[in-house]
View 1: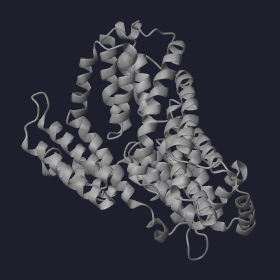
View 2: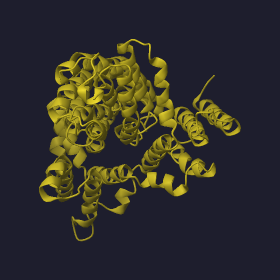
View 3: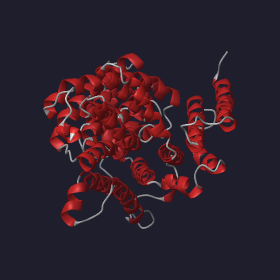
View 4: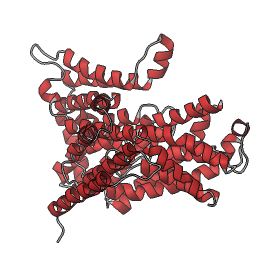
Length: 488
């Protein structure tokens, strides 16, 4: 009979066996040895992540060990990934979240949300998804997830303590809902996620073709409006069985807790002000940079907010955040994200990503609609192991050339593919929001795979369908006619 230990042992040995094949066999003629070994290390990490052969976070340090060991990349080049701005953004965000939990602010916010959304678990999940997606349209999906995570954890604690609800019946679908809605909301606007900006930059710099904020909104927003309720339905009705029954006893408990919690303490007020200031800076970063010639970025803002908490006193002895509080953050997530970034960098520098993209040649005789669906599926599942920004940076130019070679409008390929890059839901390293909620310790990787696989399939279908219906109208284009900017 299979159990957790036997699956882990099998994954450990099978991963090493697969890697040994790449070590002892020569690569294909059209693939460099660096790309060949990168593929082997990527497969090893995937197997170990899926089977939890070793702790998930420790798999994240595999690149920093194996890439220099096999002389694929220099140690310094790989080590830089573990101090990437995204990793530091996680650090700042986690410290702010830890301070919120330490002072109890997250519980106060959670009680207010419960008062508005009611005490039906399904309605609460819907409320979190709508709130998170709206925030993520204007704030980076990483920052919006970090903002919502401590609030979600507080709601989970209330439900667990008062009603003894199992994690699979509420906690897991709620946390996944926060991550997924942050990714979906980010895809809705041109500024919501770096992948959208990346595509706009490629089209502008290489083809002198501009996609406006409004044009993207006309595509991204309907896609998000379709996806949010569908993802909510699958999470709460099919993948997990979340009850829609309201709890009168919980309503009474929430009212009593609001009375018991009393007025906000000085610590809560200070942490709340810093949290609000950080959120405002995240939201208005671009206009502030333009107005005052600044160079604010999400990482510096997050770290600034964290630093303020260590500076501002709440009494003669204590500050708003102490090192004892900060030491409790999920440090392992930083290794996990760093390892994912290192693997992504290796995909691109080794030429492995371009080699994978070259196989598009074999699809020349396929129906156009099938080809678009395949491109969406390819980008989505590649993003499970690769940075979505790096995936688009690599594959968008390939898709443009590929579609133009078939005399099809490239917009019908690259825009759906770019939106799909925000909808990789299976693995913690696939998107930053996935990594953030995984760091809560309440989700196992098999829970994310179980939900993510089916939602990936649903997302591919919705993205492809919505793109077919809307793209031609937004850009006044026809799928089978090359635009002047590409044909010229």
